Length: 139
Image (cartoon, rainbow, N blue to C red; front, side, top):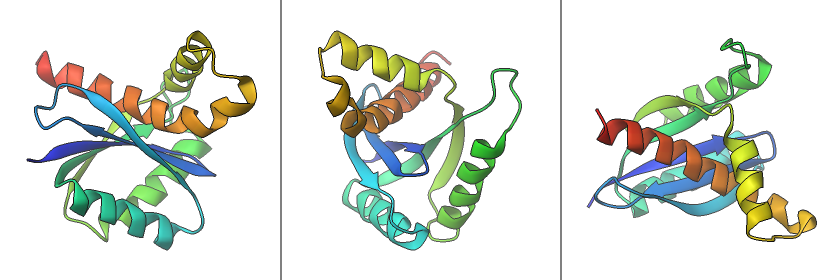
């Protein structure tokens, strides 16, 4: 049963989410602490293999005016490296509001501020993936 993987690629961490086999729901998987690109990609390839991932949705942090900024360029460079290591299709999803949404969810769940950091990236990856899944489902 294949799945779709969502990624929130940051400078210090990569949030990872996976779809269910029906491609309806996104679920937080893990937060990868970034070491160096080759090791980060190695871990992603393990997750891809373990979960039979057939599509990767990567959050693209556009500016509010819909332009590509320095952070987007970093994400795209990382994705270029990932593309060299896997044949799995990779698509981008606008992630402009996901960090704010994620923070809001953690506040609603009464997660203490000092503990939010460990969850925020995988929750952001879940929002990125869920947005993609919802749009795909609704045509």
